[in-house]
Each structure stands twice: as structure tokens, then as C-alpha cells.
Amino acid sequence: MTTIASPPAFVVRAIPAEFLDTVRAAGTDVSGHPVEPRAAGGGEPLRCCLRDAEPGESLILFGYEPPLPASPYREIGAVFTHAEACPGPTDDGYPPHWRDRPQVFRAYDALGRIHPTSRVHDTDAPEGALAEILADPEVTRIHSRNITYGCYMFAITRPTPDHD
Image (tube, rainbow, N blue to C red; front, side, top):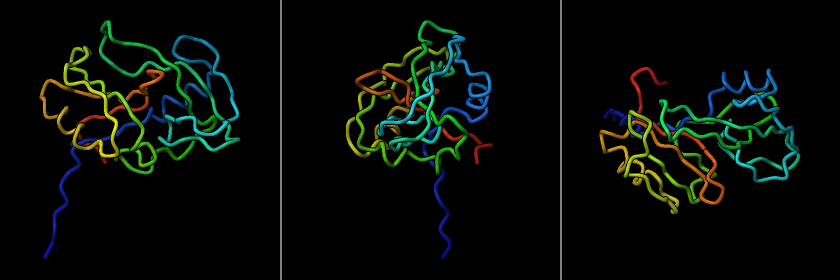
């Protein structure tokens, strides 16, 4: 008997590698400020490969503006990535090492405005919360954000037909 796999309910999207290549090459962030090289102390959330840094890894810290339509809700925040290109996330699913990390799931509509389905998520099973948020057709994307610092972690969208 052949089983057909269900399409994923959502796709997790790290900061795009092409964007990171530009930041690394220019040495400046979206505001024109120089990136800050850092040696990882361990535990810094890496937005390039969606895992925590190991002590001693070479990182950069810079300001990032997650893509949103022009709206008052656009913002810039500090993010860590590897200083050199890395392979990126291992899959499109929820980052396995961050499953138990409390996060704010900030939902946005097509105008780039925060949607009322936004919520705090603090268990090790984010799929249900994400499915509920994405069930609202007005939601076009979700940003996962750190609760303590408010930093952008990654984006969550519905799968697209051209997504591998």
C-alpha cells in the first residue's frame, strides 16, 4: 500500500542566505552600521541555520529588518549569524533545538499589520499553535520572536507551490 505524505502545514524560513552573503560582503547591516564580529560564548541563537551557537564559533551580530510591507510595524533588531556562510537549516520544520524555547508568534496580515491571532507559545509542541494562527486566512506570515529580548528568530509561512 502506498501512502501519500501530507503537505507540511507551514514552512520555517531562516534569514535568506543571499541576504546574509550581502551583509557579510558589505560588512554593514540594513542601517549601514558595521557588523560586530563575535566569538560565541555558546547558546547564541543563529538565524542562519536555526540552532544555538557552540562556544568559540565565529559569529557576527547586526541589525536585521524582517521583510514586511511598508507599515508602522516594521522594525529592526539585533541578530546573530555565522560569520561565514553555513549550510543553513537542516529542514523546513520547526527548529528541533528550539522546540522548548518560549516564543512570541507574531502574526501579520497582508498590509504588514500585527494580527490579533498573535500569541505566546511556551510548550514543546508549536505545530498546533501555528496551525491555529495560519487557519485565519488574513494571516500571511508569522514571526517567531524571543520573549525576553523581542528579537526576531525566524519566519513561518504557508507552503508555496514552488517551495522545495
